[in-house]
Length: 505
Image (cartoon, rainbow, N blue to C red; front, side):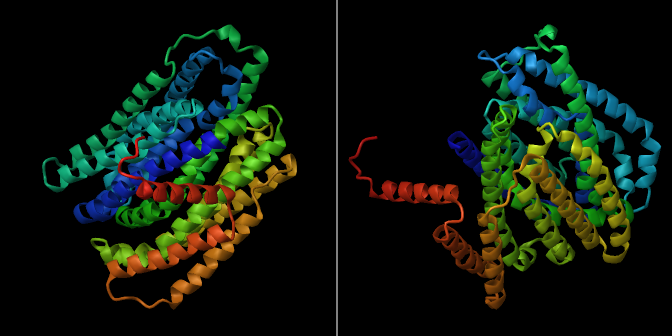
């Protein structure tokens, strides 16, 4: 896992730099200078575009990785694979946009309450935003296939957030009005897409030349079949992932969407490590499955699941032990603190995803991919029903509870299918150790009194409890990979300070 570890570590560093910028944007710019309704507007626009984009991709994030080994060649052209990715996304965009426009009136009617009317005013901007997001994913996927994730991660996690900060500040200081803020917000994703394209043009081939005869009928039939199932699966999983934001907006209004956005961002910090580790592991997983090396695939599944859950649990601890301090520091924190329990339930959702997401990756690129179709729409129905029942009773907290229950059930089924059909699963003693350690840290957190100052209290809790987690993790030998990273980091730290001034590199 040498290349995987190196690339995932670099990618994770970039992700956390982006998360820090996102933290500044969301917590100190958005909450200070945007109203909750305006913040909710940017969120629901993005989620709507992501939903459309997810369908327009026609399964590229999975099929692109699954079929790359069939096209891979020693030269950089890979038998015209880039052309097929571009063409697939283009056809998906046309088809999806036509369907969305056909149901325009129903969509507008869904968001027609007075508290969500602002979204209706900017409805058509969802389409260019979805276009940019679609090709952003296409270029990211191609870069991942070339085993390069750092620059695409930088573009998505850092560049877009920096541009967002600038745009929000321009609006805050009245250099632009609301219309231009939204226009530039959409354009920022176009800039990111262009940067990704320039990067992959340097590291690989972006030629549109291709040889149709290379894709013979058996392979072509397999690609069509797999893509069809992935489109339907993506539609169902997209509903599960996005319906909470849409229904909070429709049933409660954009202001509550703003609160939900803050809570959502906090919880999403937990999944940052998985973005790099999952992406860089996928080509290797695809190769193992193609060559029927299931024992290797099983080992990779356990390692990836454990390590991303371990890091995610650590971030979850740091987040929850400081949750009251965060709201105390946050501009208008008393208002946004209504989302405290939303943070908790969404954080638990992210932990479920860290354990189960790579199992879904295994299933989606295996010959059993069609199984995903039999339960994903059932889960979509449960999510919609749960939101309708729980939001009127518990408000935005009800939406987060519904999401947690749906995702938990989803991954129980996915993991069960993978274990049944392929005899591999993500569970190991290390995961049980992480759960126990997390519970112990939570108990100690309850026993520690508040220092009176949120900044000092946050520093004290983070150092004491976060440090205890790392030490216990190391000496309990939960993850050999994590321990190796710790030893290497400590070694480099001491070698740097012990280096003689006259030593030459």
